[in-house]
Length: 244
Length: 244
Image: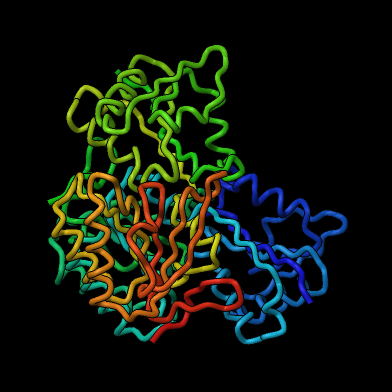
């Protein structure tokens, strides 16, 4: 059994941010597999089967995609952003690990513009020095690991990008994140809330740690925290290359 | 004085990774400004002036680009990768800060595929959990800050991406980086050296911390270090979504 599975990043939302490499893979696909809103971005055409599944079903979705590929279909798994950043690529390899007869499938990952890069571009260059990228959801890790990483990241003076900062089922956790940042960082620290960036629902809000409120974030928001040197120039937020 | 300056990411090298948004901006430009090898990627055409400058001249290049924009030219500054990740975006805002009459120029940043995402995609999904991104050059920061960040990042169990790991003028520093990682991490830790990814000179090498040697990196290499859970499945390297 062999076959080939493509895992493609659709970028943050805007069609002009989809790479030609990804568009070409989609044009040649017989099957597109993914979370409902991402599959909804793929135009229907003859010869293409769309497999849209719910958000909680990543591992089952990945196994199904590998099986379709092993059967000789030309399958593209679609992710938003970049598949390797809190998206479908790791789920595909987890599925492969759990289903040894699927290890012979060739997997090709096609990178995409991940949300933090699009969000940073909208306000200037807040990630222009060393930075870290943290998924604030505790679905897949203990919450105390999130707290520990936040403190170490602040102590390292990393700029920070947060994915999945706040959901209806755990609104208190982002309140706690802001508390920890207030313990570790100065009140003037610049924070950007970038919601649904490059989509018609885009909403950008630049504020300070002192003024930040948990309600400024939801699950469609990426949060960017500057480092100690991050500042404003004109209408922009930027982190200088020089430090120390 | 007003004007508009576009700062565009050309991605890691492959033409199929340039977003349509960036291609459109380049098609409408009267002037393209950038480091020599990036400007060399732009096709010559009538009505387009290419301004190629040396690598050390980022701030002068950024000021020149802002001035051209203020004069009403349609200027695109080209960066490799993403302009906001160790590239030209922060230099443009530094130039703006130092030259107050240029603050009225509108700056539009167009994101690109940064090298770490293309490198990760080539080997699987090594950045599939929380990670940090560190520029190992000490041109713009004290070396002890690099060492301190490395240790804190390892203690936080971040996967790591290193840019500019090693140059001819400071070969000893990447030796020191490997020493620090050996003090903080287990010898089986997976490391990927990805050189000139998506170009004809691409060379990928996956090894362990025990087997890693400083000579495996140069200035065209991105280095990806896994976290404690990063492992191989089949031909791939991946970091599971689940931790702890």
